[in-house]
Image (cartoon, rainbow, N blue to C red; front, side, top):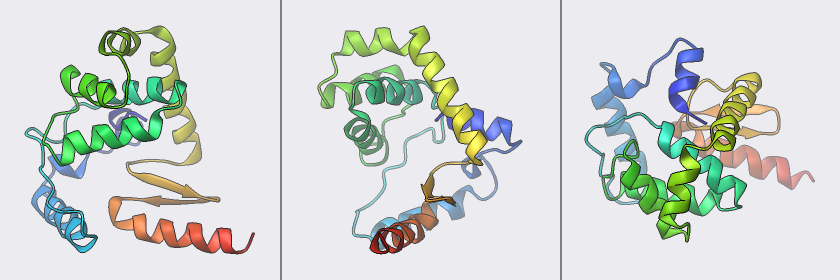
Length: 162
């Protein structure tokens, strides 16, 4: 998904550009520490325009590399401080999972990837997604990194019954 498009469609903005920024960052840092993830290295600037990395994720999904690409991108961003709004960061994430830089760079401007991103956003909006991260467990949506533990618990509860 392209978070910027979701925010715009829902007449919202990221908390990262509001007066809640400092508290939000502190909350995320605390949750990361509680889960033993180590310190977050927030990129400067953050948040940034995520259209390039969102297109990269569409291309990665088309090539069955969404999870490793997403993990590489998030590690670059929040462990190494790279700005995922920059082409170089997205190409490096791709390179780290075996996607050739030139191939990924061409794909980022291809009509099929652009349409794939529009389709993903339309699908997310139709499902009721209004921000990121959102996790769907069955019919229930969990929004916000502070709800990821709740989503995991709901997932386990749902799968214990099957």
